[in-house]
Length: 292
Length: 341
Image (cartoon, rainbow over all chains, first blue to last red; front, side):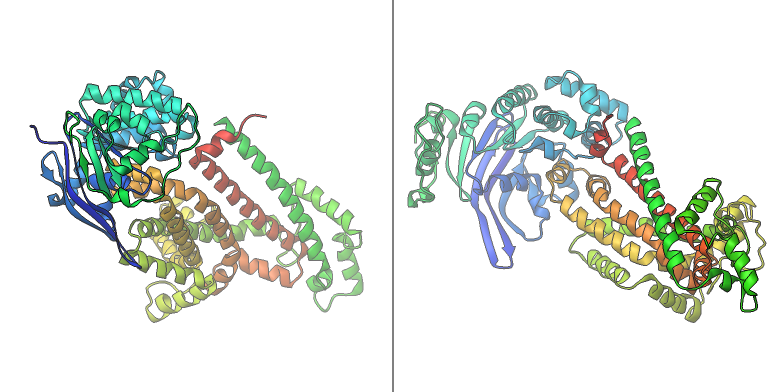
């Protein structure tokens, strides 16, 4: 087997606060193969987003954060890299898409300026004209036809869907090996979210980009991901190929999570326990065939 | 930039209305304060007849509304009347003294922006570290004492005990500079006299810095506060996750959205320096509008009082218009919301 693009082993994270030490990740392990789409699913506060920020190296800069375990990116231990080497990965080898595209773009700069800065990460000497040309080409890939207008606009002048396409284009502009999508498009309405997810899927397939897809939306995860990790209170509770997990959820929390999805066919909002001793059950792993 | 032109026209129109209001107010106040301007101007030996003649010449016997009518008619011709104190047209007096004050305030304003904003950026970028704590302490000191106190302290420290700077005045007497713009820093350069320019610059450092200190502190504190807030915005996290250089994030991505709320206050501070300049000028014997202003108020020199106040108000309004335009330039949302009616 080839080297995984991302290999997280027994990752722990805690914060030192005035009231003492709080551990929020209790040793999670997950891996993403080259070109694979992996989803990390869980409720708010389960530790999905902090995992993404550790991979990017953003949390390491926080002085109150204590991080244990190891994160290997393309076989290299991230902890062993110095600040400059870590920084070099960001925006080039790995990039990120955020929840709300409109507030993730700087309101007082034109899209073109921000795109230029993104492209400068891969080629520091790229001229403005070359950057604009390249940006227009990538925007065309996410079905933005009037690239010139979009590049000249400020984020508040574009729709949420267009901003999301811009974000996707920026994220893939430097051909990263890993794309982290943190609840992409949660702030958008469902039709626009579906369209942009389609585009994202098409692009990562074409570019053979590995994706760590963070979401609480099970429907989207089922459509998008090859493999799924279910995270609950800082622990992975179930993992396996998407089909196997969805068709035969075994962990009590996963079952509760799936039961919690409101049905289009009605029947009211399901009644779910806030917490249950069952949710602390050990990790369930599905292999490729879906057996235990 | 048609929207900007509309904004400018609108602000100019409202400023004119404010200016008219100020002129009425100061016109009335100058006449309410006790004392007969004619008697003060002519001195103790004047005869009752002379005083009556001067009062008639000044229209002082007319109703105040009629007097204001005369005043407006004069102003329309660009005439602010004659000062009873200097016996020269008030416009000539202002032209003589205003540039010195403006020069001082402009240099202080440059210091405020040129020192205060970078300190604020630096402080926000290294928030919680030693540099941040130092800057916060210094800017708190700057804000907590009025400029005339700083003027005295700076003068004692850097002109008296440690004579690095001249103690008073605009330029050494040995230089003869003919006045073209009235701004010594410009006039010396126009004459090509670099030594005189250096001398004038050397003279302006202490008074301008004293005047600017509280503004520097205020600008640094505001910039820091706004930037710390901006640093929590998703677009900063986005910039960080794309690995934009920390310096570029600080100077562009975090600074520019933060500058917009700071700018209004900085503009007001800048305008407030016009008032503070009066005391600083008195301490450093700076031949600006302050000494003239104080003298004419004490002598109840009606025309000169009204003229001085009007010119200061106009400058104040002008600064505010400039700030508004700057904000519109920086904030695309304001720029684009100026729709044609």
